[in-house]
Structures are given as structure tokens and as C-alpha cells.
Length: 117
Image 1 (cartoon, rainbow, N blue to C red):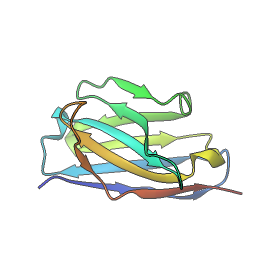
Image 2: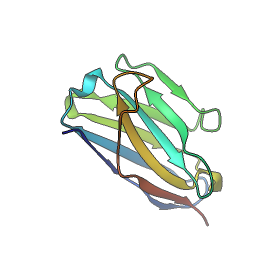
Image 3: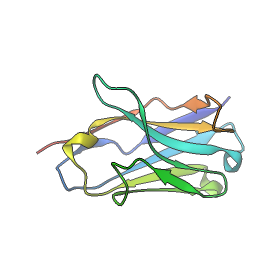
Image 4: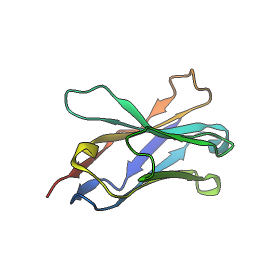
């Protein structure tokens, strides 16, 4: 059974940093494309960052230069380092793992990020 567990969410002031982790079990993690998505109230879920099995990354334009995604296949973990956070980054952040870009994949339960002074 595939399971993804996110951690590291919370409240942070504008300009601050947070580090999100997505821990996977039940899969050969190194084979999977892993993405971080977010959903703000009243908005659609959107891709924030994604990393392929080969380590290639892509980012939403709104987070380029501020967020960094990385993976540690030995630990079955993907990390999203978020710097220079803005109030508009406030959302529930979800981890997703899929074998193919066109697959639905498996979702984690989500973790809340609130950027506010």
C-alpha cells in the first residue's frame, strides 16, 4: 500500500523559510516522479515543484528562485525548501508520487502553510 506523509508545515512570517518533507512507503520510490502541489482557499490545486526519477526539476513561475525541491532515494524522502515566503504562498501543500506524468498517482494528506505577520 502506497503511503505519503507530509511534515514541516506551520505559521511563518513573510520573508521567512520553511522546509517540507514528504516521506513515502510501499513503493520503489526512486522510480517515481514526485511533486509538491498547493491549494489556497477558493482556488484550484496547482503544481509548485516537481522532481523526476532522474533528478530533473521544474517549478511554478511564482516560486522560481525561492523554492528548491530535492530527493533522497535512500531515505524515500522528497524535501521542498521554501525561502522568502510571501502571504500568497499560504495554502495547503500536498505531496504526490506518480510513475508517469499522465498518471493520477498517490496523494498525501496535506500540510498547512500560513505566511502572515
